[in-house]
Length: 512
Picture 1 (cartoon, rainbow, N blue to C red):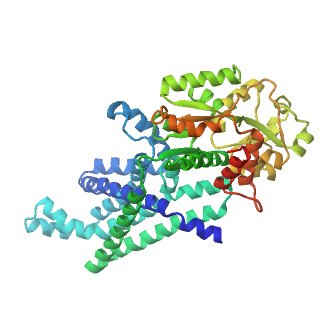
Picture 2 (cartoon, rainbow, N blue to C red):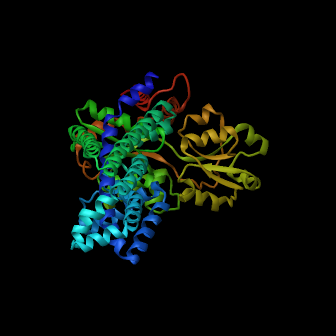
Picture 3 (cartoon, rainbow, N blue to C red):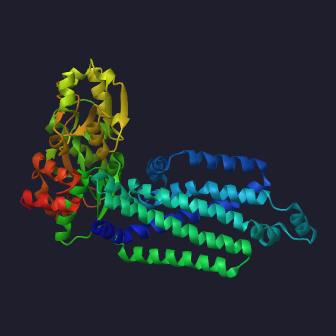
């Protein structure tokens, strides 16, 4: 429990960011929903369109909605300039505001539609203008119902805001995603309880405002509103006090190796006197675009990922030729500096349990072909959309009975439990040796190399001070050392380390 309480108490900055984001999204949702509700109450056509659109938005998974705003904002840079943020607060704000729109709009329209016609006629009879009728009659009568919609939207938004981690916005999703990937369940629990507790507290305060409006009690609704305002002000003060625009922002993708390497890089920079921030749990495509746009300063990426995802290449010219091509392309096309290769490769590789492979007589991808139709293959969430999978499938003519997506952590558990027969493993993963997995040979070389590279954004590409601090990492990490560090984080029970602890051990092992 000490680990749990320590994790919970260390979430102050994430909680503040979560509160500011959620409150901003709800506020923006209210600002759009209330005028739209008034218009919709006076126009059946607007009513149908507005409710139809907001209902459509609700059918889109929150994670997908958040991700969609990244390419939208990236394309808008041609209009608004390179300073338009594409990651972090802005896309999260826009997506969550859309998500909050429906309950507020629906309750507001319903409240307007169910107002007593006699009261409205009386207002007309005494000569009220439309604005006076709205302000003095319709708004007070509708307010309790509108607050009910705001309560619902607030709970939804606070929950969905945890997903903003995936697009680089700090939130209470950070400990949840990090804990899931590193099997640190105390961290997951701390993030979940903090998010749930925040939602319950906000619902309680908004409920007080709702009851105050219904009872015409200024004390109730005023007290609730004051408490909400005080909480938001505290979060803003905390966030502004801890914000550092000069900090070096380091990204990590959604698996343990990335968390470890980010902390390894960050610790070297901190020792050299730099301020550091982390953006954990980002998607692969998001990371590269974020570095290219200087939304993120430093990342570790892989040659095969850049080769297939960004250069759209399906050929395999060899490790060194691939690396040199990527270095030149990054410099010319994006202004990104590839500082060098870290010394190990983390390639995709298909793996099976040794007993299952022996039972089926499988040693290579070619051996899978006649039995694949009876097997289930598991991959990480993006694998089956990646060019590597298409290349392997076409090179060998593989057709599996079922494909299933798992997070990287649970993918190995699925193989262990028999829910998957084959998985798209990572060659630097310590669980390959720990679980005694068989890595299937790739005789047709359908899978490209995946050398880990240190990438610097255009903002710091010419900073030789940063480059000098990080150059000792180049070529210094063997695949054996990386596997050991990864397994120290991924293992369960005794000996399990946090990414920061594993990074310290890795630094000692490689002589830094």
